[in-house]
Amino acid sequence: MTLTRTIAVAALGFLGATFSAAAQDLENGAAQYRKCKTCHDLGDGAKNKTGPVLNGIIGRKVGSVEGFNYSASLKGLAADGLTWTDDKLDKYIADPKSVVPNGSMAFAGIKDKEDRADLIAYLKKGGK
Image (tube, rainbow, N blue to C red):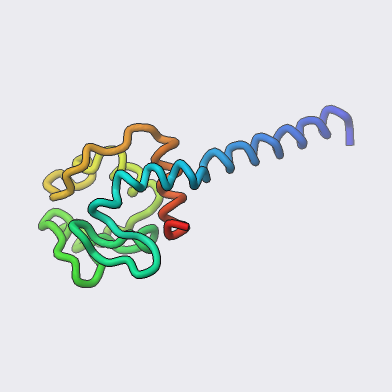
């Protein structure tokens, strides 16, 4: 292996670890979740509040939490088969009304992309 190639491989490894760590700042994710926890519960023993529980949200069909009364707009998205993916949740957290125009969630959104990525990582970990 040439010196140039060795340096390039090492640099790529360093950059990959840096980007991975940045996207997984769970401490910041927990701080961002504090904006959500008044209405949403997460973790062991989570219960529906004003909003549905957020356990297992990634990969979950929209409007599918048992016992939660969703808005007509979310019920419509559920009927269309929408599933919460990282990208869809990112768009929703950035600007809820852009995804669910007539939804009942009274939240302006989180504008910073890194804060949203950290929040999504935190939600994936179940608040741990």
